[in-house]
Length: 444
Image (cartoon, rainbow, N blue to C red; front, side, top):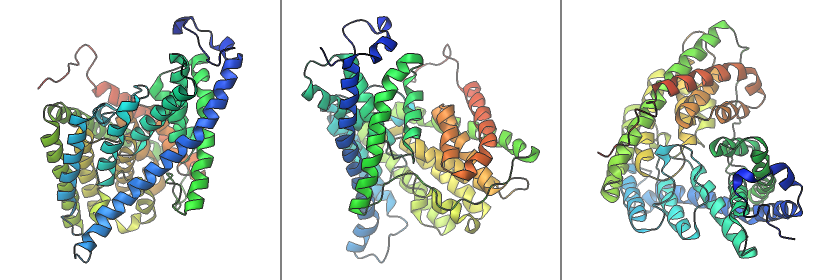
């Protein structure tokens, strides 16, 4: 009997309930679990390499050149180099460096084998040299592409339906521990895929299995190598105050504010992207200079390290929350502004994911608002994350879970506030977006 879960029947005629009972689907589950091991190991290696590149370029290299520390202007030339490398990769390698982050989290299927080198190189140059993007989109592409390649090597005659399921399982495995929980990665991929009903279950079960295996591999490799798990986590969460009328009022304010800020970031990133596409090398160098300049402005105006603006912001969330008392309102406002500018420029031209910078911008904005009466730190932090994520990603369920599961037990306390902020931000964002009839691609 064939091990494929689907034949040549058109997708609309497939009966998912019957398909799940077949021997072929059981074999597919075994393949998904087996592929979860190497795919998650490769994903762990990718994240470790990004971390080492960041340390090498921003810490070791300046000291090797004779500087006592990292100069505040250092990001400017380094981001220009990153722009040159990414631009050349986009122009000359197949696949255009992978997913364009200004387009949001969209499901495009697993990339072909020939596109994988360009995706990896563009992501390493972007993330390793300080672009304000996260690793989730490259990991999803890398996991999906490797899983499809492995499945075709094991089963040369595998049909497109089974290949697509294996690609999804590989993506699940690749980001299994990145967001702090395999379930968060699953929700992210579920919402971006747009699947529903039994067909969702058909794809979800192998994905969850691969994700669970991948999370174990991430944990094991992190312990064995001593490098950690590169997983989103907060270790210093202040106690949250129970929601009251004042905090629900703040949820409305945070939701509306995040919708306007997120819409502005995304609109301008798409505006820039249309121009970057004409001259990808030169334009990406210029946007790299903009990112570096934003980091320089923050460092010079606040006296803090430029790294607060650079990178995805994933590792900076915990220090921001733990050391919030050391940030004045003015410093937080400058941080939000500079991070938003760098995020917008990075979205338009570099390669990476949009999730973590959106979380950081929202968290910093919510922390700034918590200095005002009626809003505690943890509530503002959580609502800012959820509202900004949904404004940028348009994934409401994922946004609620990102903001609440991250806070542990305190997340349950603030969840009603986060839900209100996310819903308000989501509705306002949709209202601010042009209607499909009015939307026209910018040809410049």
